Length: 174
Image 1 (cartoon, rainbow, N blue to C red):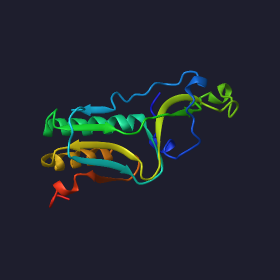
Image 2 (tube, rainbow, N blue to C red):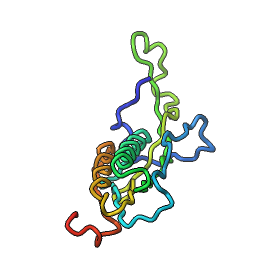
Image 3 (cartoon, helix red, strand yellow):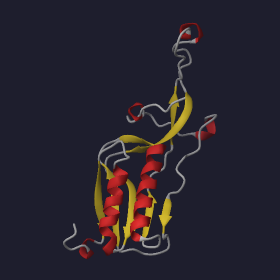
Image 4 (cartoon, one colour):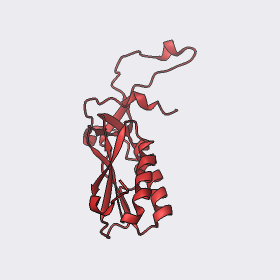
């Protein structure tokens, strides 16, 4: 079955997270949360911050992670950055699957038992929540900024890029 449009899941709803009570709850599709050189200490930190309250599906998180990681690792080098995904998709999305097509009215039960089956996961985000952070050296500042801009294109909410650490090292670049 085809994936539903993201607008169906964007609105914040009541949290549905207790996987011990949910049969068939899918695992997360986000492969990694920490990438790059995890042990090094980098002086500049940039963060992607959400501007609106929204649910971000796991496939959007994974797409943003992949595009940011690929851009920074190819431009700056594998050992010259650290990237961290700061949110986890805890919320389980449900869908009430309806029969469609000819003769569907005979098969369908309408809204009877319409609670829905688990189909995916999403991260619940409020305004000001840090979604993703990149740590780099000052000479790779523009690369990290572009990587976060590309990751922001995959998000269902407006975002902003904030320099959290290393302002003094970026004279004339901000």
